[in-house]
Length: 134
Image: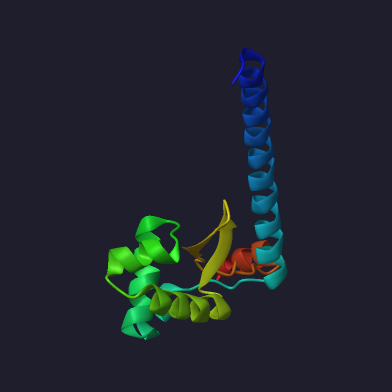
């Protein structure tokens, strides 16, 4: 290998690194758009109690880990990777966890349900004034 070749290789490697970063960013944006389009509802704490034990273990572990691949969950929980994938898919279908791709690897994360904002009546001030007068 000649000196000029080394510089060319280093330049190409830097370009690949930049491309990889751009692809990762595109992947994040697309995952966010897919998530929004699916209208994920997330899981409420009360729903967690209704899950079967293996499903609950995966959701709880994802809550601790943040984001994990099927292999990482399998290792952490001592379950077969295929079982983890099957359970995770059912949780994705219910909207309890999100599936994303990160650097070409499937990852899961918990989708926590958001509380619905309470609607405040438009005439709240006049209703409060009436209450105070009574």
